[in-house]
Image (cartoon, rainbow, N blue to C red; front, side):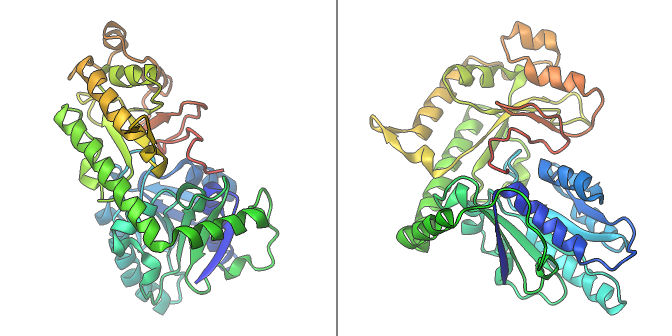
Length: 370
């Protein structure tokens, strides 16, 4: 394999796109990338590098039937797929995406066309990779498909903030040789500390930590079900997911949680094609830090306890109107930003510290991606 360290997940994603674009023959024309419901960094890369982005999304994940049809188009150069989405905790069916690419690329390469690369976003997905061996794409032998995986060490390995990596199959990063790297990069000291963490914790230690974390997150998910809180896009969740998104009628539960110092991220326009459904929700990304104990209870235990109290004071059903939200004491922000976006058909997220309207469903800037 080949690897490049970067200063964050957004930079890793940019590096992955840049190497694919640099590999194209001169005069290729405007290239196109296929995806489901991507991270905001992909939209930014679209604007920065000038490629076209085609979304093939169903319930938050890549629609494989649509993907199979689109892959034959000559202008398609890459597929961006997520092993874990920060927006709602779902996983694209990455192993099957690679299967499709290998089959299609065999024909494309034979005809002298450009092979379609797979950019696999694993920045948040360490736990998914622990629980889902099939998602460890670099353990597979690929014949025709360049595979590039992004992974953030600063989220998973206890490393310093701003330490991410792009790892690819042999030759996948060759186009970047001699290129000038612009922007922040991890220091030598940060890399040494990250390697020291890996050596001291060990692979089996990380495996134990993340299996414990995932089992505890599963308890939170089951608690939500027992409280009649509907999990968003539950059909696409994989064992090991450490992000949980929940519908929240009238945005009441999230507001009550915030008063107890639980800073969840707002979700809105969750089902733009079915306005009869609840359009609002909240999501949280859990890390091993939430298992630290204080006064005999972990942060996760405290959250579950508070969630039960807050959910008992929230409506099980409510209209999506601002009148309903105000009457039930919910948070107004999701309705406001949905209103400002008019008839947009993509899910939006309002982060707790920054407001960026995007069709990806994410830009809290709290996920560490540059």
